[in-house]
Image (cartoon, rainbow, N blue to C red; front, side, top):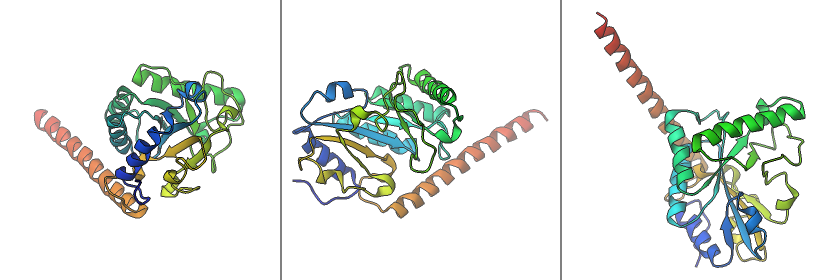
Length: 245
C-alpha cells in the first residue's frame, strides 16, 4: 500500500517499487527499448541546484536497482560542474549505472542554428570527457523562461521534450516541489501505461520537508562550504608567507 503523498525517499521508492510490478523503468538512452513495451516509465532528474543531492538520490536508486538519466548543467549559478569535487560526483553517478545527460541552457547559445548545434556538441563533449562515455541525451533548462532551441531534432541526440517519439508518454514533473499534474503515485496504474517522470533531487529527503525549509538548509550548507574553502585558502597563504620570511 502506498502511503500519503510527500517528498520523502520512503514515498518515492515505495511508488517506484510498486511501479516495477507494472512497468519497465529506464533512462532516456533506453527509450528505443522501452517504447516496445506495453507499459514503461522514463525516469529522469534535472540537477538544477545541487550535485550532492543528486548523488544521494543516485545511490539510493542504485540500491533499488533503478536507473535514471541525470541532466547536468555546465552553466549553473549554483554549482560548478567542472570543480574537482563535482567531477568526482558526476563520475560516481555514472558508475552507479545511471545515464548522464546534458541540461543545456539556451541563454548561452548563439542565435543561429549552427551555433546552437555547435554549443550542444561542445558541452556534450565536455561531459563525455568526464565520464568517458558518449552523451546522447539532452534537455533544455528552464524552457518556459529561456529562448526556444527552435530545433525539433538534434542529430546524434535524444531530446525528450523535442522529439515526437516521446509524446506518447504522459509527462509529469515535480518542478519547485509542485506536481503540475498531481504526484506520480496518482498516475501509476491509473490508466496511463506510458510515463515520463521528471524529478529534481534537491526536493527529496529522508523525511518530507517544505520547499522553504530545504532552501534554507541549502543556503546554510553552501555558505558553510564556501567559508571552509576560503579558510583553507587562508591557511595556505599563511604557510607560504611564513616559508618566504
